[in-house]
Length: 137
Image 1 (cartoon, rainbow, N blue to C red):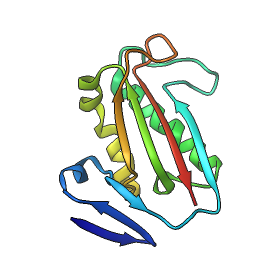
Image 2 (image 1 turned 120 degrees about the horizontal axis):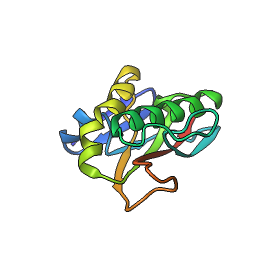
Image 3 (image 1 turned 45 degrees about the horizontal axis):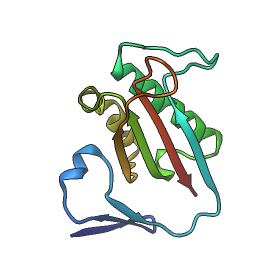
Image 4 (image 1 turned 30 degrees about the vertical axis):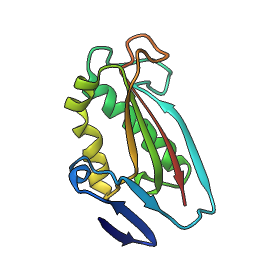
């Protein structure tokens, strides 16, 4: 079991297979003074238009960017995420595109506990990726 402490956060990883996906299996953090909950973000632009209907990688990128925007508006970034849930309608396509999210996490050294869940559909027809997050600082 590997437990490492980073800025008072204890990263708990009993195995190492998850490290390539850039997430921790668990984290023990001091109680934050502020908590930000981010509703599901998809491939939606600032005008509310759904984009990239047939491109899971582009949907993953825009959904991630939208999460990062919400975090920034709350004075946080991906390093502050305490729980990340990625909902997808096609697990194989999502896994093939997951590097888009991993790249953003790696750029900041963020390793939030994350869950990838396949669902039968999302709220917007054609949407293949939706990401929600909880963050605290």
